[in-house]
Length: 331
Image 1: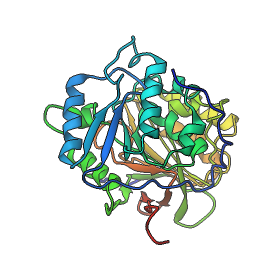
Image 2: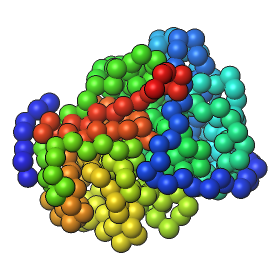
Image 3: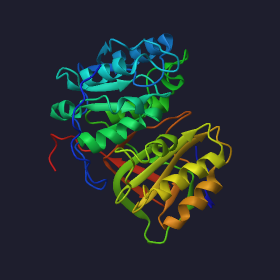
């Protein structure tokens, strides 16, 4: 390892899944005055953190509407599956909404995938979907079923954005740059080259896929499973011991989900012990570069990444650069 120190919804027939290497559409990025919708596809939402996170969106010049079931609670879920799915679908299909913002992760998003009317959602104008962690399930499904680029980034009702002392400033700045028209997406810098790869060359370019490792493993064997061929794969997780990370990577490899990947960008592994030896061992046989230590996923800072947009791995700088183009911009 080379290291460098730095800092009740209708069911609809799903459209056919798209090849992973095919570029998806980028939604229009935000402008001041746009309306965004807050929804809770996964775990129950802390209303105090939510209020703080909502205020941040208002400070950015956005109008914020709340899903009808946002503050529902049913054990470890933010209310019934049907209510959570209804909020998500209604926000996505509402032409007055410019972005759907997931309040937090937790657990429960995979339970919604079979409840959404994908045909109706595919007919709606593409818009931004923002979320991370458990929301990985929606990133996968929206890429395959809707062909839309989505934003993997910090959520308003979390410690990073909704703490009493205010948001983590690096996370907030990165999110703003990713969300708004004209925002410059700076390279995300890691701290090491974990696997040099065999292909040669310092730069690897392809659409970014992946997200939270546990969710990607949970999607194996489903219509929403990861297909990494021709892509740059982002992986991160939280509170997973190295042996569990080994098990999930082995599952993805044996399922063929990582076949054809061009390279890997490893984000945060908060409270995961030291997973890098396991990650290196399981990913090295794929023969592609693996950079590590990127501040993406959990903890602070949480920098934002457009999933489905092109990403460039530079193995000399240990960096991932996201290239997002607004759909109205000239090629």
